[in-house]
Length: 174
Image (cartoon, rainbow, N blue to C red; front, side, top):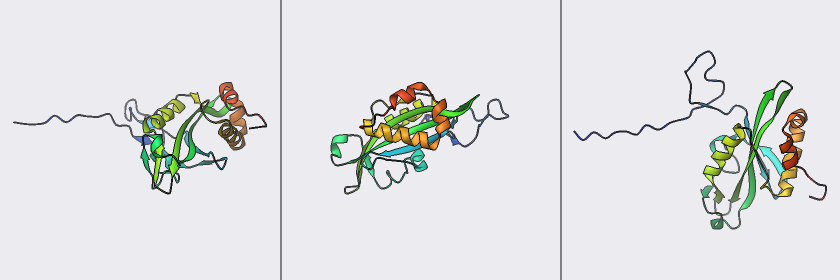
């Protein structure tokens, strides 16, 4: 008869701990986001803050906003950076393993904003894999991020990749 074949899609399950702990294959194909922290940079206020709601696009910045894929449709949007920070551990201790930034804007008056969802997902993945992608950020926001990372984890900052230090280097006039 006219049976339709259902397409099976690969699904990732976000979990807290290692899914294969004690099992060889159970939980394979899951994504562990335990070591990823979403840090927002408010460009105008020059402030950094953590909001775990961003893990599911439900941060205070994102709530109540319909995001559009074209930046031109939100000309008066307030600029933010969402920075995915991944922490790993080596023999010396924890360090900033991956740090990647994504742009977004929000215009609360019209309840619209701009962000590229594929970019946000890909940058989170790059952070998990240890990439440093912050060179496209404005100089002032780089300084805010560098200060935040140093304040939150001075030892982690010191153990981190030299590329992170170089890419977030600040001068006193920024």
